Structure formats: C-alpha cells, structure tokens
Image (cartoon, rainbow, N blue to C red; front, side, top):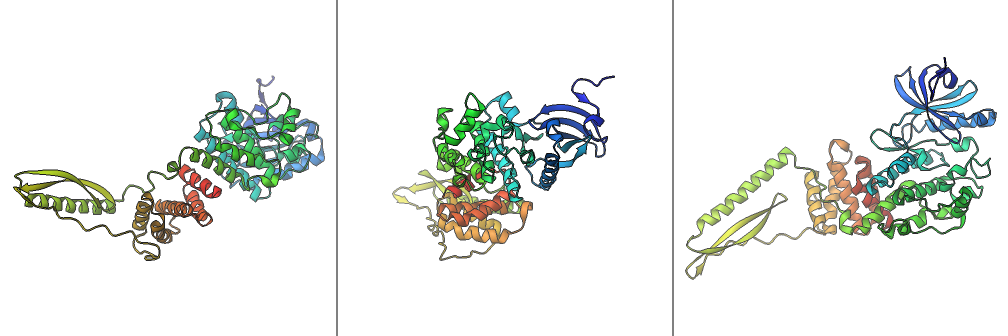
Length: 467
C-alpha cells in the first residue's frame, strides 16, 4: 500500500527514530521534512541533501563537518538549534528544531510589509544570530528571508548556517545554484570572490530594505541582471519605494549596501541599531528618552511617600486655619515631596488693608554639580531616582554622579532587581547626551543584556553608535 501524498515512510528518508515524516518544503540543496522524534517525543524539522549532491563524497563530508560546527551555536538565542546530523541510506540529513511560524519570506508573501516595529525587532534578532555565528568563525553566505524563521512567539531565528559553503555555493558560477538568491548576494560573491562576515551583513541589509519597503533594492527582470546590479548600480532611495519613509534611512542603506566590504557596518547588530536610530531621529529627539524608566514604588517607598504627603497636607491645612477667612483670593502652589509633584490651592486671606502673607518656602537648593559631589552616597534606588529627575530637567551633568553611584551600588544584582537595568540605561543615555558616547556604550549594552528586546535601549545604542 502506498503512502499518503506528501508523507514518506521514516526508513525512506530518516533513521527509524523519526516517524510521521512529512514533506513541508523544497530548497536548492534538498527537501525539508517535519517529523516526530520518538526518542525525545518532540516535533522536529529535517533537511535532507539532494540526490545530486549526495553522490559527491567531498560535498557530503563538508556538509556534515559544517553542520557539526553550527551545532555548537545551539546556545545562541536567535540561531536555529541543530539536534542531529548524519547520513541515512546514502543521503546526508540535518535535524533541527521545528519553528511553526514559517519564514520571513512566507510572511512577506502572505501579508506584505510588516509593521515597522515588527520589522526592526526581527532584524535585531536575526542580527544577533548572525553576529553569534561570526564570533564563532562561521559565515552564513546565504542570508535571505527564506533562511530567517519564526517561532511560535513570532521571534526570528537564523537557519542554514554553513550549508551554502558545504556545497560550494560561493559564487554564481557553481552550476547556477545561487541564482535563486541573487537578490541578496553581496557584490564580492557575485564576482566569484570568497564570502566574509561583511557579505552576510550585506545580505541582512537587503533583507532590511525588503522588510521596510516591500521590494529588494536591485530587483530586476532576471536574476543575472539583479546580481550585476548589486555589483555596479547605486543604492536607490527608500523613498522611491515608500515615500512615507524618512530620508535618514538612505544613509544607513548606503553604508549597509556599500560595494566594498570594508565600508559596511562592523556588525549586523550595529546595522540594525542604525536603522532604529534613523527612524527614531526622524520622529523627533524627544522620542528617544522614555517617559518612564523608574518602576512603581516598592511598598516601603510608597509608605514613605504617603507619610511625607500627609505631613505636607497637614502643614497646608494648619496654614489655612491660621489665616482670617473674611475675604481673599487663591493661587496654586506646587510642592515636590518624595519625588512626587503635589498641587495645593493656598487661600491668601486679606483683612481689610492688612495682608497676611503666606510663608515663603526657602528656594530649592541648586542641583549639585559633579565637582561638588563626585560620589553621592545613599540607597542606589534613590540615587537612580534623583539622577532620573535631573535627566528629565535636562541637567545631564548634575545627573551624572548620582547615576554613576547608583550603577556601582546595583552592580551584579541582575534581573532580580530591575533598577540595575534602569540605572545602566540612564547612565549610558546621560553620557551620550554629554557627548561621551564611547563611555556610555558599555552601560547601554549592559542594560540591553538585562532587558533584551527593549526598544528604548536599542534606540539609545543606535544614537551612541552614530555619535
């Protein structure tokens, strides 16, 4: 009895431990299957090398060697995890985690251009995966939407690292097999030169252009013409594809898609941050400073604030009771108590021609300068709060020593206390505002590690990179 359409018996494709094997796609190098790993009880995806490559011993050895190398990236958050690699019935196979969200190519085909925030999130996640591979000495060589997959939570992961190299797909001259991805090929690859990490970053730049505009930058009627356009044509403006996009993106893509590898961004994440920064800049500088970087008060802080508010209210009530009520006017006084702004209506009473003046509070002390208070002491949470208040007032120099002391006091507490992320962000942002961008970068990077995926942090990092 024959198998149902689209379903193969396990022994035809994969070792016996894999059951319910079903074809779910076809690539330039082989077929992709969904299967059940009976040993671990989970759904997996398997890529089986095409017959035309399986007969070449050299390709098979390189395929297996590259797959095992990439398996070492399993700890990278945004790289598809590889579970198994081997050869069955003469055909090499690769078993990896199954991602039900499909690929970015699928999403673009089905839904068109995604929301800008979603596109930036996918690009930053893919960039992290690409940079992790480069740190391990692995070059992808085929970065494109079809190789960026989405998990059940719509997070992006990069797949197929090293497979292009395994079958020798470094140029258009290899049996025409790269023609299907000519839309994303770096100029040096199109010329038949060796791919480098800069080639992967170029490919990510093309993916970014497509996610934001809905089109590839050098799209042509034939793949050969498109590959040649990558080599010789200038980078088009994003506004020629989407007039509503800011022209500030053009400078980012000029660098991301530079013909010379040395002129491109130094990392994939730097490219992603530059895109976010250009979009944030076009929306106005005020958008880069978040409205709130301080969490709701803890119970002990709230009690302290309530006591201070009660004392302030009692003082105001006593003042009002001590004044004559025969005639008067009113005005609003603003008090700052425990970091909170309180407005009280003060009645100023006039008795015939004599005015009872309301007590004038002493003028607030000027904020301390870094020289006057190089290392404030106290609770690091309160130091961060004070620094943040000065940031909101635009008093960056006065905020600096408070935030430096807060970061020292919170060092190493990690995710258990969100204040460490807030203090590092605030310090990094303040240093950037003071023009000390290289000093601020490590604090912003620390905040990014503590709060991965936070758009405010990414925008600040992009701003620091530009500075």
